[in-house]
Amino acid sequence: MRNVTIIGSGCAGNTAAIYTSRASLLPLVIGGHEPGGQLSLTSLVENFPGFPEGIDGPQLVENMKKQAQNFGAEYMSGQVIEADLSQRPFRLNIDGHWEETRTLIIASGASARWLGLPSEHRLIGKGVSSCATCDGFFHRGKRIIVIGGGDSAMEEANFLTRFASEVLLVHRREEFRASKIMLDRAKANPKIKFVLNTVVEEVLGDDAVTGARLKNTATGEVTNVEISGFFLAIGHVPNTTVFKGQLELDQDGYILSKGGARTSVEGVFHAGDVQDRVYRQAITASGAGCMAAIEAERFLENEGH
Figure 1 (tube, rainbow, N blue to C red):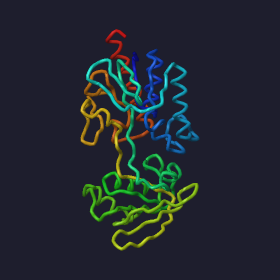
Figure 2: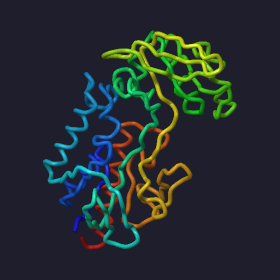
Figure 3: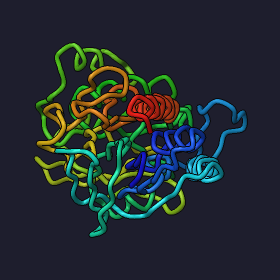
């Protein structure tokens, strides 16, 4: 019987593991389908406090994991393929193996939607990114591409004009899902150029992004453009599928918070991007992991554990 089980091994999950293990709760951390979370896809993190020279994303996650293990946290690779939150102890099926736990911290994150191109996947962290706030700084004075047609694409494109010399906003249609105010703001920005009815055939570059091959869906014309950055802004998918029908989720699958780190089920807590659709930063995920850990500790204390 586990006191605390944490699903996810990114900043939120690892921070929750540090706090709960220091409280002598001997947490179990389940790696999840993206071990290390989205930071494991980031080459250099320059905005995490305490690292004036920056730090590699995978190294930062590994440091957190070691810190938690030093206090007694146990790590298990695998995914939760089934969960029963109908009664306590909660039951989790990890790749066919069942675990029971008194409390649960869900820090399974949200996965960025990608186009699915092999070249795109190969260059993630080398100019291909799903986080403008994280990586825009690396493209000062360069031309970049933003993919998408919703509010997040307009917001990312506007933000990236702080650094880039030009932002090509590539959208496969002429119509946009973005709200009028966000679309008008992007259209009014002289650094943003709209490239409509266009899809990406390939991201170009060997060790870093150097360009993109674009195809106009109306004319069939194929062109290569030089860029240094390729930003995806086509949404995120929270990793909450196994909890549908058991936890209150919003229409997109994000966990609905019941105050602090609490969910609709007593003894189940949330941390990080699985609930946060606004900030999506390593530091906010870590803060949320701390909150969830403290709430889980107090919950168990009130029960006499």
